[in-house]
Length: 286
Image 1 (cartoon, rainbow, N blue to C red):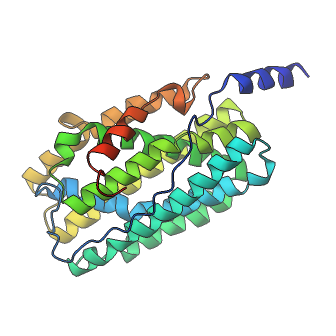
Image 2 (cartoon, rainbow, N blue to C red):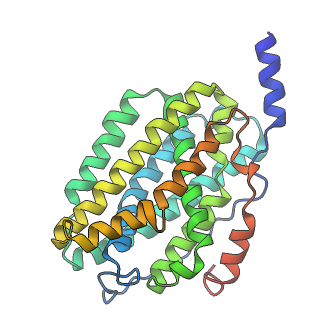
């Protein structure tokens, strides 16, 4: 009984998603003439984002399934509405990212085996062998990961200006919506199963899955370019992830906040980045 009272009070202290979630149905076009290394001429940066473009559609369908399993247990109308917006946004993301796969094929890249491995791991290993609650915890953790990456992307306007315009807008749009719905899966998890160790387990599985497949996919593209073992490429990889842009370091330390017992995604309100991107990068699009 005491445990139930404590949990009830904890729920009241939590900050649910604080704003409406907007579903922006933007129809991106990616001409076949887009250059191979579309991110400032950098093979490393280009292939990191190419890998993300391959991972997102399968990953986001998994997120939708994980949250949807608990949808009928949510009584809060505001959270139900947020779930609806979250799912609609994720479906749009999958559709738009898949469009660029054609460009990868035109450029001569083969990625079917990589996608098959990712799909097998996600569906047959993670989803099939983890219970529903752990799958939801993994989803909540990965939603925090993507929200952290989205914040970094929107903060680095000068750096992302090097990217080809259509793809720069694609990732800006996606980043905006990742921030908008960053608390939804977490709020659902806290409503249905708020065990701290479950949340930690979800982060451990989710984070290392994301890291492994991001490195694997980037390496796959660089192998096909026959540049993976070149000194310049290895130095750029090290710089992007660890020493210059420090994407891995920045993400890893930001994710540490997730392990705080009183964590909530909206403890850090970064809607100003959404507003700025809507007024600049997506001014004539959204």
